[in-house]
Image (cartoon, rainbow over all chains, first blue to last red; front, side, top):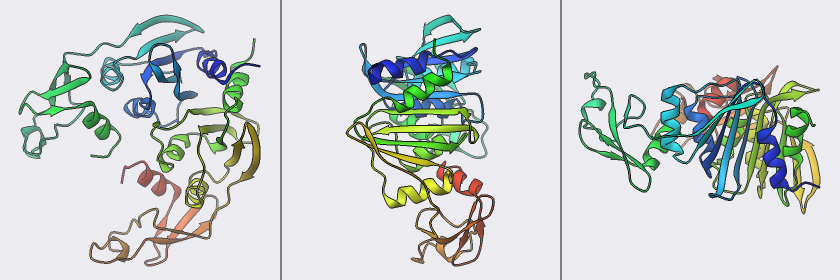
Length: 163
Length: 163
């Protein structure tokens, strides 16, 4: 009999014709990844496991999405949420490309500055939020207008609709 | 070689010691079910498949949550989001109980009335939102204070943080 770990692995590698597998997501972040990809389940098949064992990371999440392609903006967002993530691109039942996400140098128009006085939060101004990406232990964003820092928790909370 | 359908099935039935499997969720609603259960992935293992084939329903979602027990309030919420859902309760590696969710007669304190003038939406009043559950084609809630109807889409949007 297979262990439950082996079966979870099976699900994730089970054949889809085209799509992506996002592996090595930090444990607990898979739902945020789905959220930033604006997947609500109206599309192809989606499979997700959370908190499964990982040799490299202790625990991790994995997401598999049938029929999905990733834009550069989406890759940048994933790199902020899940800097350890590995992307597997599947075409015609084979993994044709596998790579680790890479933090961009700047992020623009995706998250809001958390400083209410920042020019990007003034309704009459047209300033698009823009951040420099710093990478200490975790990615940190610094607003290019007011210098305010956003941690990964700030970003998560925004993307999950809490702030 | 197993078909991908068989492997998805495997994931969901793979052994967990204690927990629940929520099967026959209408396709696309699994994330809302996780949301109402306030699962963010900080708990045990979670597995989820969306838009998989179902003999009974065409397409369906399935959620498996390790170490989770459901309160009556949570069951009521699931019944609104996913009236077709079947709950499997797993204890000591076996399914010890299997049942279909049942719509409650009333729902209290869980969703807000969408009428801004309703007494439950007045900051100075203490009225707790309460709804009678009507079941036409889909569940519909009727506010017990002002009579306003809430459709399943209104409920979903509220729970997904859009309204």
